[in-house]
Amino acid sequence: MSRAADFKPFGVDISLDDGTMTDPDTHRIVKTSTMHGYYLDETALERLIEEHGDPVHYEVFEPKIPEQDGHVRTCISKLYPGRVGDECFFTKGHYHTKLHTAETYLCISGEGLMLMKTRDGECAWEPFRPGRMVYAPPCWAHRSVNTGDAPLVSFCNYPADAGHNYGDIVDEGFPMRVFIRDGEVVIE
Ligand SMILES: [Fe+2]
Image 1 (cartoon, rainbow, N blue to C red):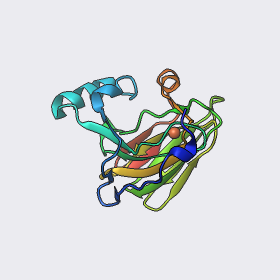
Image 2 (cartoon, rainbow, N blue to C red):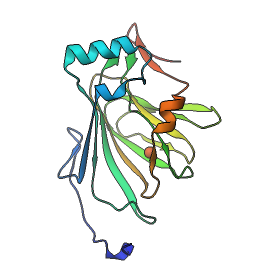
Image 3 (cartoon, helix red, strand yellow):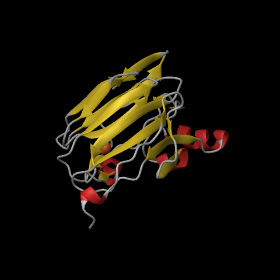
């Protein structure tokens, strides 16, 4: 394993206008067809994929930073606007594999909220709006939700050795869902 001091300083350019990172090391594109089982209305999800050609659900841009103790991993998350039925588009959400690690999200553009939950079933949410930082504490799974009409872009930072555990969210889901009904955001 390389010593942390062997890693050289670097910088990346982030476009605050369109929520992209120039020359990311990884650029993950998550299509709607990978979201089976996540939304309440599976038929509406199938229809969306069929009628809109499997649109991009969200993108994640990451610079190359080792997943090692002492480093900080960082990313840009860009969640597109949309509904599955009347349920707002969201990211898959995850716990950190190292459960006792936190994450900060700075909302750059768009509007929405962060759903968070513990293994004990406690659930909370915090609004996202440009300039607002949301803190997902240790042990809290987190999922972004876009309630607006533009991409929800956030800048995230977390301990580099935290790891991502998506599987438990596939099994557990989130106890809260977010809908747009009669033009209003409904969280239930
Ligand atoms: Fe995270």
